Every structure is written in C-alpha cells, then in structure tokens.
Image 1 (tube, helix red, strand yellow):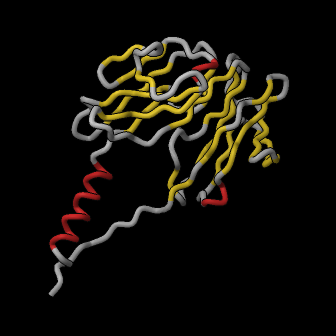
Image 2: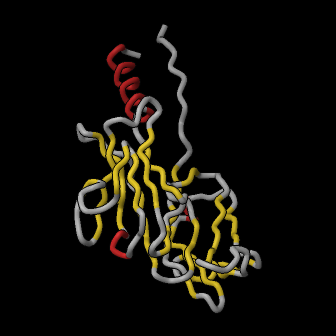
Image 3: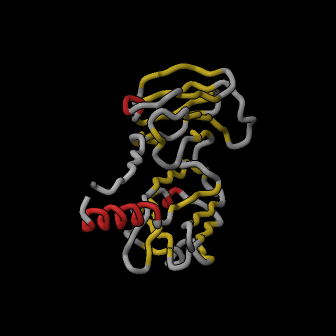
Length: 201
C-alpha cells in the first residue's frame, strides 16, 4: 500500500473517531410538554468549541442561547420543552464540522414511545417502551410499525431481536384509556468493518 493511501486512510479514521456526539438527557427522542431536557456535545479529547444548534418549523440553524435554551459550555439546557421545540438537533464545531443529528419530538399528549435516539447497529437487540406521563410505566401497550399492529405487550416493553434493515420504520405505541404516542423513526446501521493494514512486500 502506498504512503499516500495510508495517509488518506489514517485521516479518514481520525475524522470518524475525533467527532463530537450529541447526547440527550433524558435519553429518548420523545419528550412530554413542559419537561426539562439537557443536550450535550461530547468528544473523546475535548468538548470545547462545540455548540448545539437546531432546525424547527420556526427557525433554521439557530444556536443554543439564541432565543431558546441556556448554554453551559458545550451543554444546552432547556428548562421547559414546548411543542415548537420539536425539530432536528446537532452539535457544530466553530470551524464548521458537525455531528450526526437527532430528531426530538415534543407531545402535548400523555403517552410517549421510548426508543433509541441514534441509529442502532445491525444485529443488536432494541427495546421499545411505552410510557405515560403520570401512570406506572408497566401498563399493557400495543406497538405499531408503519401503521400496522406488531403485537401487544402486557408490561409495556417490546424487544426487537437482532435488528436488520427490515426493522427500519416508524414506530408508535398506545395504552388503553391513556392514548397513543407520536411516531419515531428507527434506523439501522451496518456492521463496522475493521481492517488490518499490512505493508506490501
């Protein structure tokens, strides 16, 4: 392998590993109205220089602190989530680099679906949970994918085993006498490929 090719692969690996990721607390993509949320940009080396931005129906690429949220270093704290806070959120470096984005949905209803915020790896098990705002989280719940009923679970939790691309879609849940959640998308990423580079003879 040529030195030029090796340098290219090294720079590619660096760009994949030296990138901030956005984490959400509580760790889910659906939030109840008036719920507090914290979003943080995290990087292996340092989180300095990263800020949280978002796109909503009201605004585009606005920075935390610019009419929404309260910045604290690389963290953005939102004391109360409202319906208009529904949108796409991501971390952005001051020089233009950006993390993967996540979709947050705020509901005024009483049921949410707890699902992975980021894409899941192919072959992993994924557990979905149906929660109400006030009642216990182990109530029987019906789970749907792309509008079709999958099954009803007596404890409000459903596990998808060894997920593949066929499990991708829009999921929602419902609890009798409480209502149904918004829909959230689940994406599946392919297995990462690890290569051992050996010098040519």
